[in-house]
Length: 106
Image (tube, rainbow, N blue to C red; front, side, top):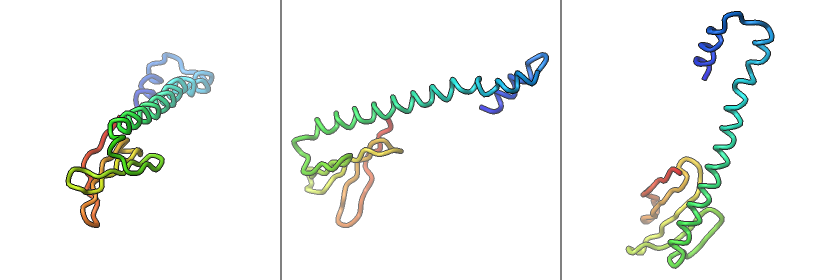
């Protein structure tokens, strides 16, 4: 964002001290929008996890906060975890090892 802002400043015909003081206002809207997008993303992540929980509810053997535990058709333990990066992660436990099966970005 610094490069486009620098280009914008270079295009101002007569750059004053007041212009310099008010430059942070140009980025304030972007900061507010970024914060708003974060809130929208968090809500969407929760809604996706609720939908997954409803789909899997008959198979879930344990629910701990943002983690579902269930058994797959092969009898192995599967974890569905709400987290960040990825937003939802599906892992399968084979013996003592965890295998990452699916990553969902909301």
